Image (cartoon, rainbow over all chains, first blue to last red; front, top):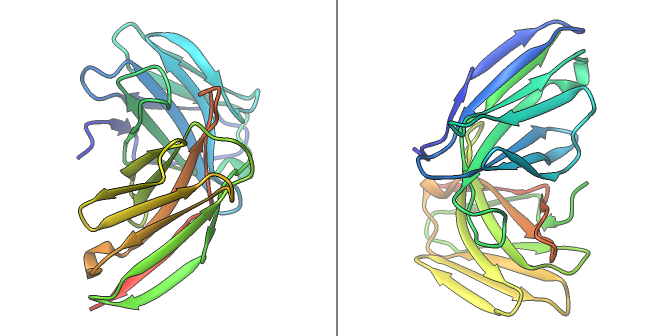
Length: 115
Length: 111
């Protein structure tokens, strides 16, 4: 158990809909990262937050947005969903501000299926 | 976009044998990390090697880094069935604002 909690574990929805994925980082971790894992794209970095502020941005679509709240939990909002958005979405956390200091602790992921 | 490329894509060995996975990358890095992922589960950090290091050990794991060749290898010695998983290398760019994963090596260890 990494200490990172993601909900929901599974989500099935239709094209055009909007969903929210939630992540609670490990106790004491200030950074939260979101990754998307799909068969064709592999693991793609989406976005990072540190102590409530956006820190780094990766291949996040404009239809997607995220935020980190004062209690440090984070939400990833996916809107106008397309079939290609079906993937496993991971949240990870770390103590420090970035990847220099080492390991990320990953949650078990939220599997999104868009029909 | 992916930075690292693992080789081989899949590897099948018997318990007790050693498993070697390779990772090549394209740009300069600050550090390189290896992660393990059991099927459909979250990734677990294995080891981090910095750009000024050449080799690191952790238990049955040995990682090497050759920055001149832009490559790294992960050696798992005396493999066990429980080592069956996908292994990913991830490179952290010098600016520290991105960590890119390779496509992974699927390791199967047969009992």
